[in-house]
Image 1 (spheres, rainbow, N blue to C red):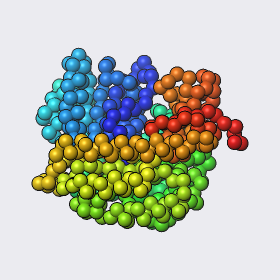
Image 2: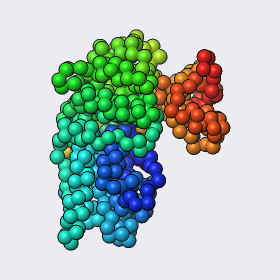
Image 3: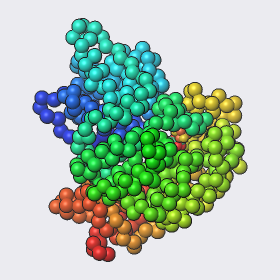
Image 4: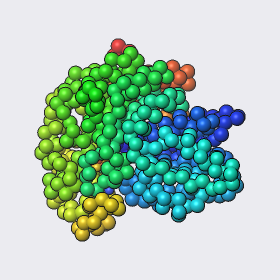
Length: 468
Ligand code: 5AD
Ligand code: SF4
């Protein structure tokens, strides 16, 4: 999962009579998706999303617990919200997501301004929680609600009952198909904060996809902590079959999925990369480290050779596949030789993109108690070496596209004036100069673009002839 650190959920202007809600999102796409669904659930309670907490009637922090400082970030953000709440006593402050799940009542007792705390599987109860808060307030009592149960199946039911509102109208949308993780990597809090693996029913996923397509979406990214563990509980259908069904829906032009675990990869899903024309040639397949000793200590349940064999099979099915991964440096017990094995692995795979992190001990996970913690300075140096090499590979991958014509899905204006940005099949950001009229004409369309310039993290191109 793309572990971005902070995301502003796109918004639209509030209507005069609606209440205002601001959502601050931290973490992965799963959280971005959850924030969108919270915003949708809140529409029924008369709220519209706004772009800043100033003047909001409700502020929600959708939190991430995967690496350190998450908890500090929450309290420091609450510190910023405090004067706003002092100005507007009616404001409702909520903490949601994985920190909420892990810290629960602790947040309520440490931060008096917080009215509600709810875990990642309970946001469908939001309108109900709001009613409770308002009832209690009407009676002159202070509301302190904590909801951190794990009804994932219930969450999926609720996902379906809240019609998808065209809040973002982005031509590319996420659809959650799977929640939770049973893998218990020894560094990771997800199995504790998101609970066990649960798959969403095929018919609900298809219905949500159809609704999105009706709103102009043409690219769907299926989301799950272990998305390739997805399996329909009734029919036994696996992810390759789901991707085939979704690809058959008129209007779906591109399909992606993230995040996969090497252990759950099956032949049919590998083959789908060669046979499903809607499936984009891009795969996020985290390995975390290149040393077998470390992989074992991480409880990844595969070796570096197993992973490399998988990569080879994928590239046989789809030779131009772009690969992406997550890496952790400085896992307890990681020696210089172990780290060198990670560097050798990335030289072999040559990732098109990757995320890398310093190991951060998470309370309650086995690795946090290891006596072999790596020195912070060593972690810093390793992270820098790794990031530098990964960026080189990424630039080389991008440079290899110069002169090629790639189909680009145009999404939004670039930060730079007079440019529109979109995504190549390999998930690279591509900027193209054009006039205003053209910008609105291309939005949401897949058009051929000739790549002229490549950087480490983006590319520039020009519109090419449709038959180029
Ligand atoms: N320390 C550092 N990185 C972590 N990740 C998960 N837990 C930790 C941790 N304790 C990284 C992994 C995972 C990504 C989402 O976050 O690389 O794949
Ligand atoms: Fe965490 Fe491992 Fe599960 Fe990924 S597979 S969510 S890293 S426990």
